[in-house]
Image (cartoon, rainbow, N blue to C red; front, top):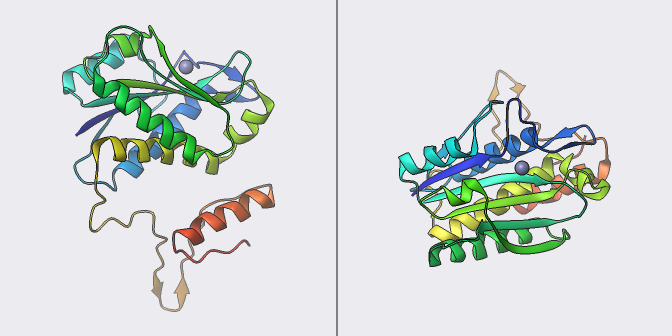
Length: 228
Ligand SMILES: [Zn+2]
């Protein structure tokens, strides 16, 4: 499966800007998490439209996916303009049954991963990146950069990871991807040599609650974790 992941905006186009955050940075962070997490699955070939802070037109993004003959394009955005929560889009013209099915499962998995966030629903729109792509294409609007509650979440590295995790779980379900047998990239690595102990830090938080939450997350996954 060829999967193109597209961080919205970039370069001279910051996207929505508010509260010290830029949409183009958040989308790139989320997409990099998605790509890394997808790397743990067999048969998922991941392509990025951009991996750094550069401008690409919507047509260029669609062309990248079309040339690759990708099986799916996911474009990641942050919302603005008053509101709260998560919504997803497919093209409002003719779309394949697969497109609708993928939107259903990916939307549901993201909502599961960001429990407590308002579900604004599955929508359709005439967005160029959706219209000009020849394969199923989905655009996600991940919370509002100009809403205080949403911004508190968007400022949390752990939350952005959860958003990415939801996208990945959706893609995994949509394409029935299987974990690589030897996949342990998210496992903390400890190397003991000459009585030196290399510890792995996975997060630093101003708010203890966020640290506790990450510890719970890690423990669920079987890693011993403590707050220092
Ligand atoms: Zn956007």
